[in-house]
Length: 237
Image (cartoon, rainbow, N blue to C red; front, top):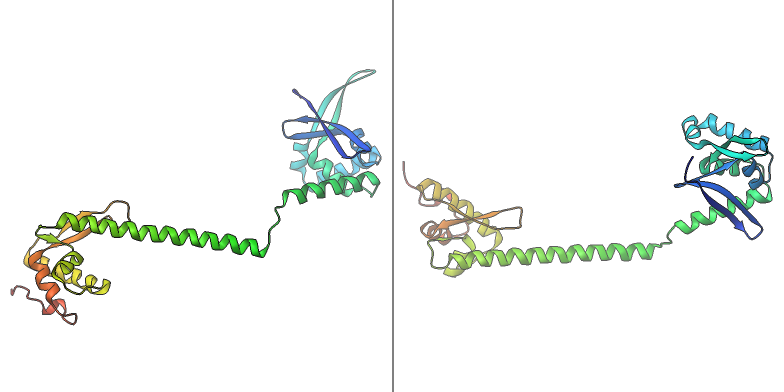
């Protein structure tokens, strides 16, 4: 393999062992792993074979051969990656070196865990809900401004929204009444062949609002709340 680098494993001041590194992978020979954990090379081979039995695919990806200079020339030496090294470190018999290795791994895991508490979680939830509440408030404020802008454009016109017409005429309004009057105005407009217009409202899922001719609204909005569409003056067939 090319572009080989050296990674130093140093769990304490007494231990310092170099390993080959390529990219995000670290490799060690059987001899280096035996020295690392204070066990025999035969033990390293045995645990590596057990790893192969448990996960052959991971084993095939975790084994590489490096060309190592020796007195007799260059030798091709088997190396294991960090997954297999870690497996051996936990499966091997307890030695001062394996215990130091396991403590070192545990320290790395602890450092990667962010401490939290119920109080921290509650604060985070409250902050998220408050942000959502503010977003909703801003949304309703923008809707109200859009309706006001529509109403302003309708001044001195023949077509109005139900709410704008009622306010201009001093007629009591509520969301429920406006919804009913809108339905009545649509029915009466269709029955009389009077056009129902729309004005676009940008930025919302409902992209437009209906506006009705003032003659229709005059009749619909002057009706008492108990009147229904059937009681309005629809043309006779």
